[in-house]
Image (cartoon, rainbow over all chains, first blue to last red; front, side, top):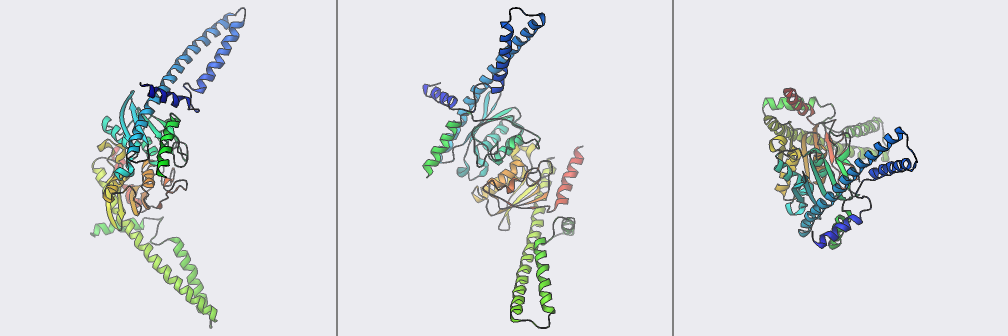
Length: 223
Length: 223
């Protein structure tokens, strides 16, 4: 990675106030158990049952440490792929299209990319997510994208959120939210409705500053 | 039209218990005004003001008659185009795909057709409505399908309903409803949410018996 890229990476992480490298629940559990261990260790002598308990707790700590390690890795992978989605969004901006970009990842490999080309293509189906879903299905030769993660710089609209559920995408990572029209939690949360036959794992706010800055700059130029 | 077609036309109209050729509200208004006219006509002599009122009511009846005539024409056009959508659905059945068909109409001309080819194309974007929307945009060279009516044999899913709103389609006519997954009134009504920047005129139940019979026969064969 170049210096500039590392700079941008740091910006994306530090400005993200909603997320941290590890999950809050995992941290909280770790804190509770560490406290229990400390209490036991402070005693001058331990009963047999206390010794067994201490050993159990120490094993639990090890497993939580491994989990946090995974969460960290996941977080940095998410930042990495969101940067790829942002790269796609910039292609849209070059065409004077609203800068929204998307990549779909399977087994830690990008299998398709897309960016908004609605005006260029004269088609409402040229949203970033729909283009990426179309290409991913072509690549996998399957309408089911079950083990895929979709990264998108802006919260999906009702059509794209619907397509994500229809394609049974496993996980969606969103950059900035779209309070007026987004359907991954803002107006609706189509991705996680229990009424439908598929629900999506959802992470929001990854790289949100950089994603929304792109949009702000674009709309400022328009005025 | 052949005898068989007329037969099917009659079946579609007579079995449709939700709809009639003219709207219930128009009929109700007509009844009220006709009663008022009758009351005035039964009087032996009318004052000047009553005469003026009678004339106004008679003009209103004429305008309601014209409106009912339009509603009748619209109803028969809807039946006609739904039959075209059913023809598309039958193409899907031939490919062993769930039989769902769609046509898009502008200025009383069919501008695009589509039918479900999800398994054949290995793409979730090959729903009948999405295919028809894609072709309509190609034809009009515009992502906006503002003066179009979309006819579809089954209530649209979340993706297709979303695409209809995104394409700003004016009017949607649905055959049979899909209580478990439909998004034009069953699970959600994405077509008419005031939160979005476009709402669609919606008519449901046109040709619903024939549309749902197609599906029943298809799923019976599968078992």
